[in-house]
Length: 459
Image (cartoon, rainbow, N blue to C red; front, side, top):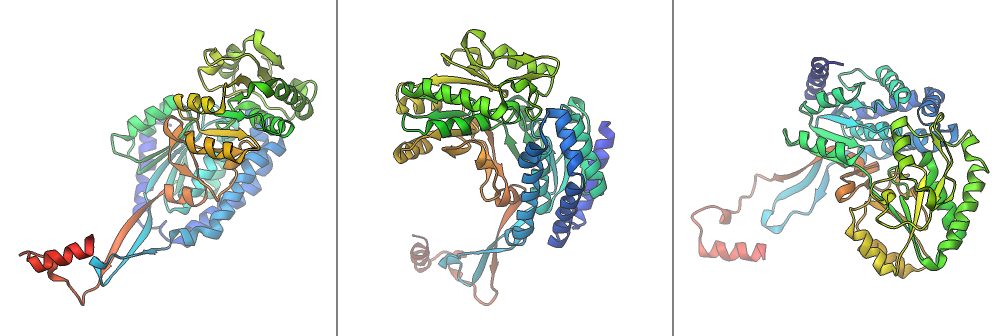
């Protein structure tokens, strides 16, 4: 798509938003209702597209993408009117005879740029939040997931006039065209390097942004943990979507006393969940493309492989792989892995582990396996991270009741449920002052009596 064509779409959306057509809550709810019906209509095609792009099974596609999107729509249908309603707040005595309230208003024309690893979910969930908040939306799905992106374009075209929601297909050139436009809000999910560019371009118009990035999310396992259950849940979270999940446990950081037993349990769980030959498991995914396959392969030190390690370049599959005797100086610890490779490291003490994690870039997620409530309180209080779980992995993002987002280098802002509505809304603070009384003490000429009254009100 040309830059001129993109400009025309943005202009159409700005005109449509300025008409006030999206301010009515009935219009917003009808919009997400149409989207819900269309998703259900195309459910099988969505699963097929995800299979072609990422090798996802039908069950995984529904559990991790389609179902979560439908759940977000259902949540918004139930709660949107409450989120949008005016909220009365306390009025200070100094503003006697006033009504103070907050009022949520949409930003206007929003740009949503989504990634390839969960191409349907991470396009549709922010779209649902943006529409519920009353915005018009330009969607830019990833070029790396072409089958899902094409289906999204078809689905959106069937549901919406492009004045309301439009999909821009293409790659880096189209991304640059979009970022040169003046949007009222930008929501980006992807890598840190691209996130920095999005933020830099947004600064030209002082456009507010939400950045959902990633990072090396630690999985701490202390000596009190239930190792059998920990291994089961770590294997699920790490190797879901072939490890291509922004909140996947990036590495295990454990007490040396339980390391060997934990690795043995992880080995058993990999065999149980993916079979003796994971590369032949039809429900096990694949790496998105050759570039990322080669990147992940380069991170695997054959001398440190204790589980897995085999791969098939033709099908872009790498079996679940565990590395032992890893240090923070190894290549695999220098970047987010974003693949089915799990390094295991040990700490001297839990306090030392917390210090080490805090010395690194803030991760998007943190996981802790422990039976100690004291350890859980200490780690969750002292470590800086976006969100996480105690005695599980990943599931903290599978709810509309809590916001999901990064912290520091792993991003800024959050969404899901009310957090998502608020992300795409500007909250106006308004005082409705009554006409029948006007206290004279704020007006000049100032008098000593008035000064005493002001001090009484404001101390």
